[in-house]
Length: 207
Image 1 (cartoon, rainbow, N blue to C red):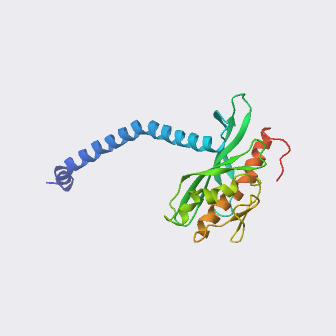
Image 2 (image 1 turned 60 degrees about the vertical axis):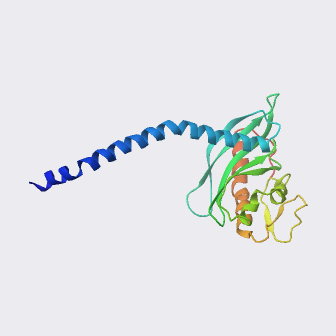
């Protein structure tokens, strides 16, 4: 008996089973992908609605905008325009990603209709340490961004968290996570504002 025939005799069941399992996995993935994408979009819509509260719907104003970063390949973002009941712009929201202490952090960041002030942010996902880095989800940290100038922000251990300005008070014991959030704001904001102005969606943009 040749080695090839012996191999086929001994392994045909494994080969057929692997093929069938592969088909089943592919079919399941194809069936579930639309629902997964729908769930992700609904989660995104809820996050944007919690920021741009006057918006009744959202339109994708910019897709796949490349954001320059210090190291590695550019990041990308989608920018959404919130539209109120009268059809006017109620504000903007864009996706932002970065790395904290525990891994990737994904945010939705809100801007007012003139991009002069941040509305705030919503955490889509993170892997930060419970009790420390996960405090980026808490109001005492996030509220500092509501009404802050839409420009480069500064993280400070001595800033007053109740004072809304360009300084953000770091989370005690979670400086890395705090830094990651502020860095995302600073990395994205200039390119986002420039792109919206380029498309004629803004006027009199101040940095």
